[in-house]
Length: 192
Image (cartoon, rainbow, N blue to C red):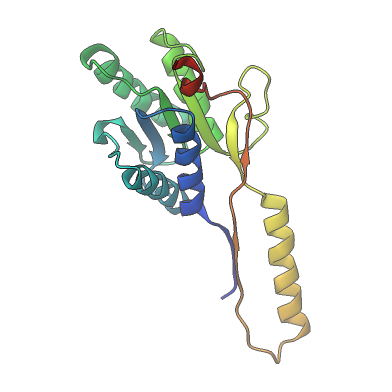
């Protein structure tokens, strides 16, 4: 079979490297445990941080199951804040959220716990949806070029129909692109 896919592992690495480059060392991750692209994004981020000599604190990885129910995401993030915001001396300065909606839920819960966004909690998310570009959010987000991917898949399919006698399979892997906005504070600027 032919396929058109985002290189989600590389995208996770890009998100983590962006935060790392801006001085963040306490990085958490929000992801969906049963959705393979989001697992790859998590793995890429963890890989990158490990290569930098920094293991992700396991309790700062917030995984949720089930359907894309906003209440599930909100509840899991709420459990994390209830546990970590009151009992831990250290708390993440930044999060990688594997989509923009997760980032919105993270900001909602953080606000309830008195954490300011982005001053206290920087975020890099995925998909670059219309949510990411809202002026009140202005999320730095990895672009998901769904229209380009659809056009590419359609072109491949039409070529297969046109040339049925040729047996081919094509894998098109799309490199990630980060769209920088205002959701990440540069901690390096605060250092002398």
